[in-house]
Length: 168
Image (cartoon, rainbow, N blue to C red; front, side, top):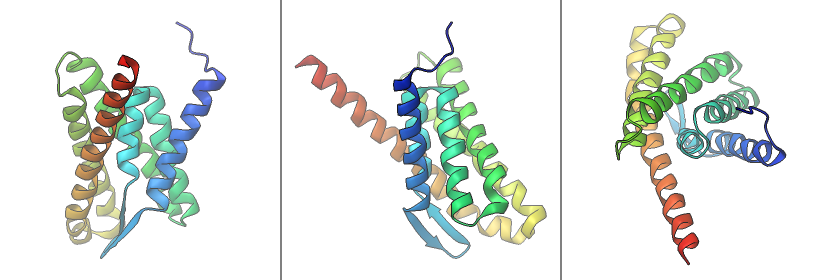
């Protein structure tokens, strides 16, 4: 198996990193405890389109870069690890455990999303305390679930559109 990336692969991966960054950095929805964003749906889309390895790179680098440029430097490394963990769990469930199941991407995104929520919640406890960690759980859960749903919906539209265009 050749693991070398072509110029086309690099360009596509770069575009997915940029989409994750833009979804995270520019589409912020302010909350009481910071903000929620649309970057997670781009991470799910990247995983659906590119697979585990490239989805992990797109999610980790795009979200980490958004934190770095946005001034959330304390979150850069945890964000990269947690987004990568989400993709790896999603990919394992969707592409390995349930690869022949019709809803594999949905279930994978949700199971990975639960890991994402758990990791962010656990790191907030030593940083900010249990009360803060639990108080942010609702918005984090909504952001994660929205990312899983919107990412899968966008993928479905792309998949059906490309399939339709190919049939013409």
